Length: 474
Image (cartoon, rainbow, N blue to C red; front, side, top):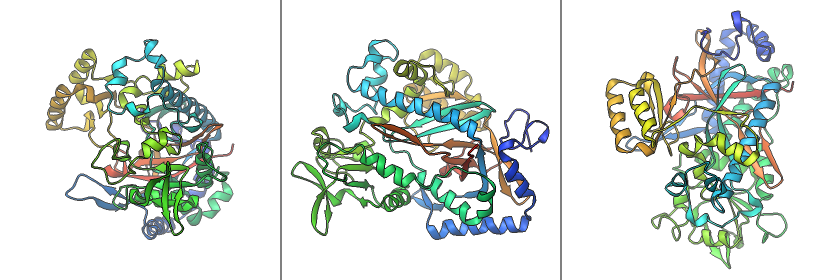
């Protein structure tokens, strides 16, 4: 089951079980395959009944699918998690400082650490945010940091999700399902809880309310509607937080505040957790064709009448070209070396880097700088000659639209198959809440797993699945 070049998170050298997995493995050895298969079917039925789905785009019309779920947990020791948490907090604080800087004095540009054109020509840079400081100075209220592992103490940040990171509902439902399926496992293993996330999210958002808020801040979740790929999550989080789920047509500007329609008339909103992209947020200030946002919300925001989470213009912090500067960004704003490393990255906008990428395309992973969900990327080692030729043309036509990275040997964790346990590649998306006085990191996060043997693509839209992530108390 183990490959010498690939770090197996359960199996150590010589096939021994790593300490974090020992209690679980003893339990697994005492189970019958028939019972585990029945539990796997039961878990799938829970997901079906709960409606835990996502939409796949790119076909004639969006197709709704059930999220594949694997019943074998991914287990991280408390020691490992402590180091990860320090690195994640350092990075998220640096991202917030960077966002404040680029929309104000741009000291990092003046210091020559990032070229001006990386900011000024970036389509995710939002000129309407220049000079605007959000309530509490928080730009990224909710962050998802994608991590991959290549060795015992080797973790890399694959990308930062600073706009509208998704997947936290799957993390919560995965844990709820495992508690339901295997209560005895949680009595044997001291697993840190993730169940307080909705409560923590509401408290964190409320702490970022604008000064005009009276009493307990009113929080609402703005969704594009039922056809959005993450609609299940929008509805789930609003329900779990005990706040209203609203669409653009439920909101209007009344007396200088954004207000939602209720049975008692229009009620002002203090904090809007928006799951609508910048361009569609306000047809008066952004895309005039948008029917998803609220006309005039940016004017209310600039006047201090509402908190928008995450702030408009945060997308520049998860731009993959900016990502390549994150070690410099962390050091510039914290005065410390980055605890978590970046994956080495070639910026195809630079002639020397482009020449290298074109010469080595079959060995590299190439991504669009604003891409997400596994779309628009090339995995060189698994690409056909036709794919490589087509991508070579794209790179030459728009080099600034791409970055390239080496193909990492991602760690594997076991999944449950008909033949027993089998290793599959994974990544991890921990979720971070930022308020003026604290940074909270939920212990664990969403583990995404490539269900196909040998595949490095973990996105559910590309055939991947999810599993529960355990962080042990030790």
